[in-house]
Amino acid sequence: MRIAVGSDMREPVTDAVVAWLEDHGHEVALYGPLVEGDETEWAEASAATARAVTSGDAEAAVLFCWSGTGACIAANKVSGARAALCGDAETARLARKYNHANVLVMSMRATSPAIAIETTEAFLDAPWGEEDFDIRNVQVVDGLS
Image 1 (cartoon, one colour):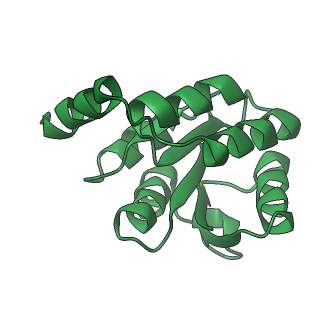
Image 2 (cartoon, rainbow, N blue to C red; image 1 turned 90 degrees about the horizontal axis):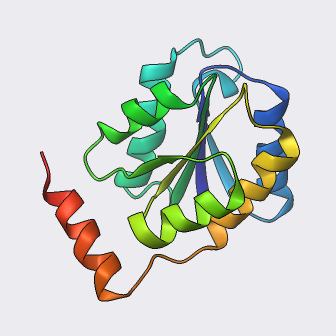
């Protein structure tokens, strides 16, 4: 799977997730300061990472910022992005099921490398919910402006 990974800074947690993704056979596209010499700030790095998913360049995205909140807000401004700020694997799984999330956002401040890897794995492994309830509510959210 091609995964976009973005952040406004490189930290041990970002490196751990990128390494885990690569070790598990995913093709990783990096955005923001995860690219050597890139000094893009959080708002632009977040939008670029989300655009990778909405344009079809990636099948999903993992996004980091210090709190996670700003990155989540910026990513959700990209039409077609459904970013979810998750601090654990179960929340990530439910974001996929109930919200059809396509961008996982995590806090670098509050998430250890081990939890980030667990959360990323759960997010990527979880299918989108296919029950009428799930689809109906995602359609309502997609129609909001």
